[in-house]
Image (cartoon, rainbow, N blue to C red):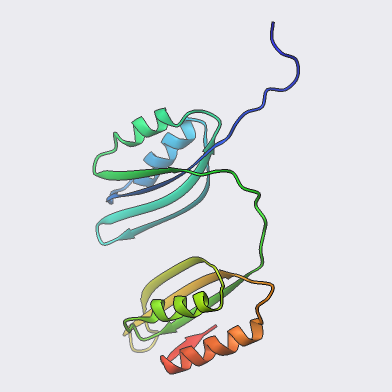
Length: 174
């Protein structure tokens, strides 16, 4: 006799990180395996650096990930790490986003991240990249950083402090 009512499905949530030789179709191969095995990709970051491709993504599924693991591990030249995560209440916190640009000098990321640490502001995302400056074509460093706002923090002071740090490092802030 089957129990009456709804059957509760337990959600598995997994973060994978993978790195390997880049080639056409790699993203499709990874995402197809997850999709075909009842996985739902929720967040991801993917990037090609030199001849390597790196990915970090989280996905959820109501089934065991054993089959997904077996199929992903068949992909040549791809190293994968799996991390199960617990479902948490997703409380949306306000965020602030900053874009810092300037000459590519050593220590910019460390200086900015140290400032946020000292202000007890949590960095939730950093993206750095080099582009060619519009007129000269010289390398231009870009740092995009997103932080969770802390209700106790004075955002005007943070903005003023960051402007001063950028001024000292000959960077621009927007």
